[in-house]
Structures are given as C-alpha cells and as structure tokens.
Length: 415
Image 1 (cartoon, rainbow, N blue to C red):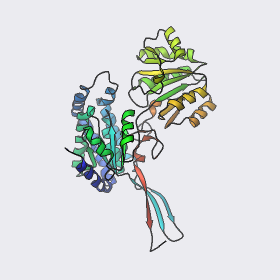
Image 2 (cartoon, one colour; image 1 turned 120 degrees about the vertical axis):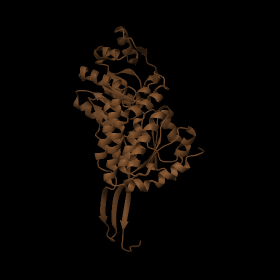
Image 3 (spheres, one colour; image 1 turned 30 degrees about the horizontal axis):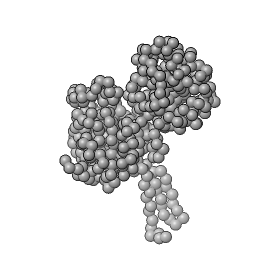
Image 4 (cartoon, rainbow, N blue to C red; image 1 turned 90 degrees about the vertical axis):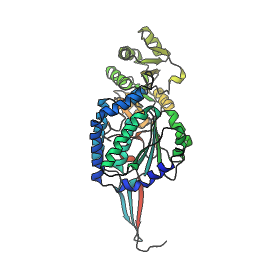
C-alpha cells in the first residue's frame, strides 16, 4: 500500500451512512456487538496472547495490552451502557426569531470523521467504535503494532456486526500500523475532522507538533495526592495505596505523594508496610528517605529532580515532604499534567481552597484519583481523558463527540 487516500475518502463518504442510521439500529448494533464479544472470547484472547508474547514482561504497558475474560465482560457491559445513553447529536440548543423574521436554530451535530491514534490498549478499539456509532461519527483507528493481532480481531467482530445490519463497514476502519501513514492521517484536512492521540507524552507531542487536522489531547497523567496535616492518616493511606497499586499502568494512577511536614513521620510509618507489601519502589526526598531508611523499607531510592513530574506507569512513585498547603499547591502547579489531583484533609476550608485553586481536569477531596474514568463517571466509556481546555476536558466521552451547527430560515430577507 502506497498511501491511505482511498481509506480516508471512504471514511468521509460514509459519514452520510452513519448519520442516517436510525436510533433503533444504532442501539441494536451495539447490543449485537456486546453479545458477539462474549461469544468470541476464545478468539480474542488467542489473538491477544500473540501480542502479549512479543512484549517484555517488565514493560508497564503489558497490563494495558492484556485482555482477560473479565475485561472482555467489562467491554461488553460498557457497550450495553453506551447503547442506552441519549444521543448527543441533533439536540436543539437554542431557538430564536429575530426582529427581521429570521428563525435561528442552534443544534448539535456529529463531528464527522474522528481519527484516534493509540498505543497498547485494545479496549480503546471497542470504546471508540461504540462511542462513534452511538453519536453518528465515523472513526479511523490507528492502534500500535504491539496490539496488532488483538485490534485486528476486534475490528473483524465489529465488521461482522455491521454486515449483519447491512451497514457500511467504512464507518469503522483500522489503519495500517506502518508509521509512514501517520503523517498522511495527521494532514488529511480534506477527509478527517479531528485527531485524538491517546498514549505516551511522546506520542501526544508528536501528534500536536505535526498535525494539520485539529487535535484534542488525551492520555498523559502526572497525578498527585496531598496529605494535609488534618488528614485521617488511615484513610489517607488507603487512598494513596489504591491510587498507586490498583492499576499502576494507567494515566489516573498516583505518581507523587505530597505529605505535610507536621504529620509525615506518623503517616510514613502507616503507609510504608502497605507500599512494601505491593513492592512499590519509592523515590523519596531527603526527609522521607531518612524515615523510610530507618524503617528498612526494601524498595527505596533517593529522589532526583526528574522524579517529580514523572509519569511512572508502574509500581513506582515519588514522595516529597512539604512545609504547608502553599508549598503543596506550588508543587502541583509546577509538575502537574492537569489530569487528576487529590487532597486528603478534614479541614473544610482547605478542601474548598484545593478544589478552587488546583488547575486540573478532575480534582478530588478524600478520594482516589483512580476514579477519573468515563465509565466510573457514568458516561459509559471514553476515548481518553482530555487535559486541555478547549472543546472537552476530563473524560472525552459520548457527550463531547458533537459540535454545533446554526440553522437559519428566512422568507426572502436580505441585509
């Protein structure tokens, strides 16, 4: 294949197909695909094993790549949820008749052709396809080579479902993994309406720097939890451990714990055994390093400057002791990727200040950052977590896969 122009053209042409599909048919397609995933577990897992065998066991992306029976069930359930969510397109936002008699209507419409570039996470293939079908968009999927076999079988299942309902397969297409086609996608302003990168900061930076098609960034998360001096220390320990170890390879996992100077010795004594039990490697600043050394913490390193503002994506985190809330806020402002930030505190004034002053897509009080997720927020699924401020911020889900259109009806008015 010399280029992907034919694929791009077919995608643009198929927008008419998906936008003319009835609500009943969209829902039926998603329910059918949900059932098909469950009945195709063996084929999905077999393909997934082919990809897993190529990846080093030490690679933190391996957990993202892996599909188990339980994870396939979760994908199937999310399809059922998405199917029953209200369609965000064709909603009337405003109606107004002007003095000159013109009738002005503003409504939501699908974005059009959505290109998604992602790494290692085959669940994104299903999530994006489902969200785009439900909202009347066409999707172009460019997964990474490390998930080639898994993505291929998932798109085959999607196409089998579309065939069953006589819907054009071109509404969901899997692009070749050859990197030379990425630039073609990023500059296809004639055919593609938006590009969404989901993955490493390196991927996001590359897309942002090279795309001519508009970009919405999702993915990278450098997440902090600040344990303020009034915190319930047992509660704080449970929150920090959950944020770090429940699934360390994802973007909403904790990277840095900021601990108030007044309580850091007591808190570290509580949390150290919990982190040790989970074999978490700690990059500690000098004060916390001393305490952890005295406790004979087995997975300990002295933090360097680059260990703050670092997305670990692994059973690793950094710890810094801060003088007060002011210093904690300064640290977050300096190092945050504006994804998810949390405070553990029993002081209402400080909770409110944290919520108001921290600039991030999701800000938490007394809860784990692991909740930043479209499914957890009741949105069914997500394309990713947007850390920018234009169009979408936070979980980029069904409700944001639309734009606006003005309809103006007259009776011969001229200006």
